[in-house]
Length: 407
Image 1 (tube, rainbow, N blue to C red):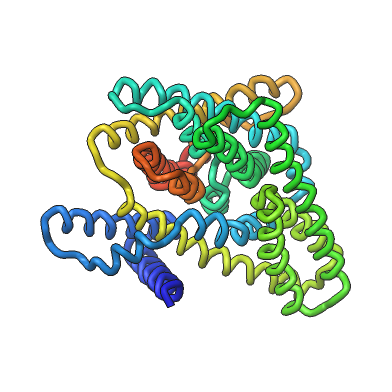
Image 2: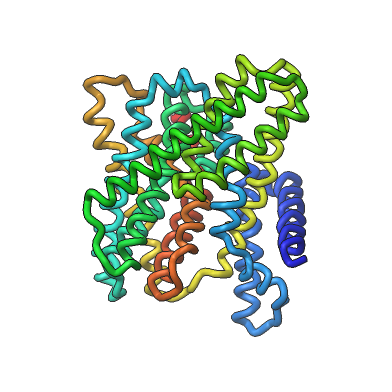
């Protein structure tokens, strides 16, 4: 019954906020939902500070939501599949070198850069945060969020080659970022240092294992799709691919996100061309687009409500404010180094560095990872910094990236 209550509250709030945004505020859908949710959360916090009673049941309900499990286990697979379903694999293949480097070495460069700069900043502010936890913050905030990025790109009007780079990178780098995060978390909490060989083996098992399993699961479902022509059955098969594939990947300790992205690319391209009728394609597209929109609405409402879980102190807030330019500078560096090295072999769109830096939005995945940290002051400072970077990313970068692209 408790799960039903949580779901009911989130859907009701998402519907109400979507109406208010569409009718009066007229911001882009996901940004508007998060903005209204933030305003409501801020109002509840202010009322609490003024001693005006707020509904403790509502606050307890929000506190009881496991954001990490809700997103990383419950929602992420569906959203990644919906995003991958509409990415042209031929266009992505043409950019595979750039996307691959951005999604792997870019994440590692950014993690080290953010971690090192954060360590210096918190030290100056008098916050005692070990370097390994600063690196953990780097791994949390380095990956761009495919859910936020793909939603903004749909309406930004970016050149096709640039859109493929950003979309491809965002689909894969969150999986890589989660792998880096898990490895660093093991070092931070495990009490022993992992060797480079152990980290490399773990990385290969998670990332390569996820990709291989994604191909296998996607191909198996492709064969089933090819053998029937009934869109209701075929939609159920794609749902089974996402839920069963993600669950099996987690059970085998390989990357669930990478598994679903690869499977989604296979079904969205090979499956769409050779295993689906026109009627099936139309219904599958409508189903996954609608499901994606609903989950996006719930997610961005949740991001706004998570403000109630953030610890506010002067030093933490100051660290969060400084973390914003740190994250942007590190994003610029992690994209700039590969772009400079690849310019001799690849052609890049004008302004690619500025657009990819400003268009590298962070979202729910970063908050989910921060909330998954063990309880303690390290979690509180990292969550505060993460939340401030994510809010700035979505509200400021998300609202202005289309103007940068046009310029």
